[in-house]
Image (cartoon, rainbow, N blue to C red; front, side, top):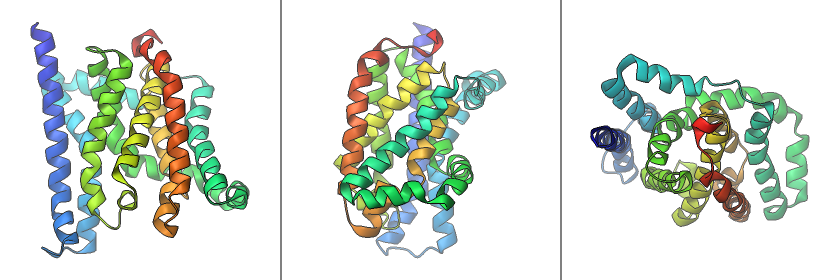
Length: 271
């Protein structure tokens, strides 16, 4: 039982480190939003960004303490695991794009989705946007922790679907302070609706991770593709229209429900 207890302790240490670091960075920002203190814009940006990286920092910190260099090498190798079938890259990138276009078409009008497809500048800038969003913000900052560290350890104790839902719930709780920051896109969304979408995305991300044999790079790209705008979150923030987000959340949920059974039968080391 000693290895199991050790792993449970590592998971707890990861969660404590992630939440303490992330929320400690965001607490002064929330205080600034409440006008309890005054912070320069550059400090606010630095604190928000540091907090967004707390899951990955937590994973790297706990791994270094528990497994040393070998553990760090194994964790980082997941993010560099690019030798998977091209269909997984296509799926990771096009699934969020499809959700966005359908949400725009239904919630704003076909012209909005059509103009989005025909925006040549957006397509030309997409690779740079994915690289920037993936490496300098939440996809890389979160996924090394949530999917690279936490999910594999949970699915060794419970079935992968339950582990994915648990990661999703934890992710929802971790995001909560961002809803108190008026400049963050999440602040314009109903929190419960955000949680529904986050849980659905957690199931899809877990399925991608297992089916690609711990392909964390694919999951990071999947996350980045969701964040590249314009998307249903930015539409809500800029226009107040919630319908595209509701449509996209419903579609993600439908896909997640379809993947629950396949996910239960999947394990990363089997692929």
